[in-house]
Image 1 (cartoon, rainbow, N blue to C red):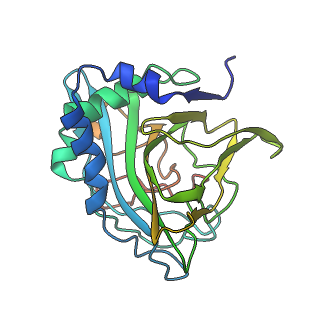
Image 2 (cartoon, helix red, strand yellow):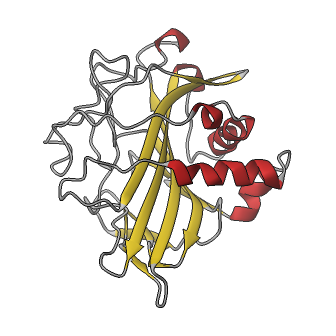
Length: 261
């Protein structure tokens, strides 16, 4: 059995995306500038920006699932569960980007285990964490956790004027397993979410800077209930993850899957 995680250098990931030019890569990274505030932070904090959409992958590319709210039970996510979190979807230009499809395929080829893409769903999160002189940013306010998916890729898109944000992995007894600081755009950690817990330390603004920014793309790989016609449905009625999707809204109800974001 392979290790439950893979650490991919920015060089390796960019080589996998070599068919795309600097302009296309810049446009993708700039799409984080338009993320809306995550208005579901329990403490009313405004340091997190976020979009989310769910897809499945076909020979021709990513196909977006019907959009719906995230749902998680309080038992799964005591911090943000019990609320239908209606995040804005990934913008159409980003969703339609051949670069995004290529990035997902590159991650799929490097998963630390097998995954059936024919019956699999893919969740894409765009997340920005801001840190200021008055407040640090918490990439994982719930602490050490799991997301309830099969695999999760954590792809750095931007890191500017910040200290901290150390990615940490733990075994199932929560003993430390691996830690790294993602520093270059497209540097990535991919985890088998069934075999490890993970967390990220707080992000603080660097000395002399008014604001610090940490942009991440999280890519979730999870089973759907059926084949491609059930694009928005993960395996098991109500089985989801670090971000559930709703019953009755076209997306999955993930209220009983562990994890939080």
